[in-house]
Image 1 (tube, one colour):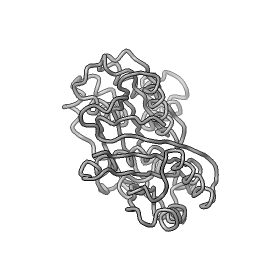
Image 2 (cartoon, one colour):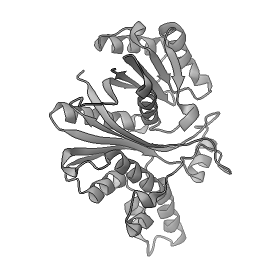
Image 3 (cartoon, rainbow, N blue to C red):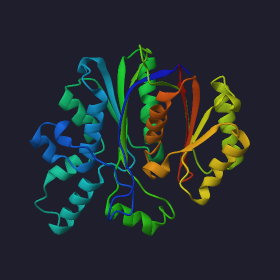
Length: 316
């Protein structure tokens, strides 16, 4: 697989528990400094501001002509606006509805807003593939770059609301799991340039209930296709969230990567459909201080159904 280079990163993520919140809530910046249009900012819901601000920060001062695509991903979309629209639908008995919450609740709102603010007239796509939303967006970005496009902005975001948290708890989805939220963006390019932060060397996804042995076999084959074996992986990053499903991660740590450095990320960002984007941000950030070339493997599963392997290399 041809590598793709990460040039810039940005993240809005939790920094511990906030008061009166049973889940990990993202620590948001002062949006006035990033989204300067007050009227536009006032119309945005929380996740839209979070995603747009993160995307704009990742782009920096880069000329919009150099961005050949904006690709976003979300698992559950704009929950606050969806709840607002549905509540109004009930309260008004389906009459005299304000269309704004419905328009703002669509999944592609964030990617579209970034393009409108920065006047990026290029490919714009949003992926909503449950626990593989970010991986789908990342794969699309990589294919666009392989086809010859220049720099692609790719990001993922999900929010948690009190209503959503209560519903998921009642359904047993969050049993023993720390829920979270956040937004991460990455600027990818075909050429390494002078100072790339890291390179994405491989990506694979698969679905369905898998045994630890099946996942181990898939991981070995994934590494072989990328010219590596388990001894070549210096860091193994997993989505441990302190439940009985951690046994899959522990199997890899113990039997396949016993000599690797073992890291986790959901203890920092919580569980949400696009949490793997935080894992990529985390390892790229921490790899900045590496003094030797490092191979990093991220394995994550979302509720044991959506699985992904992401191979990242830091060259020194």
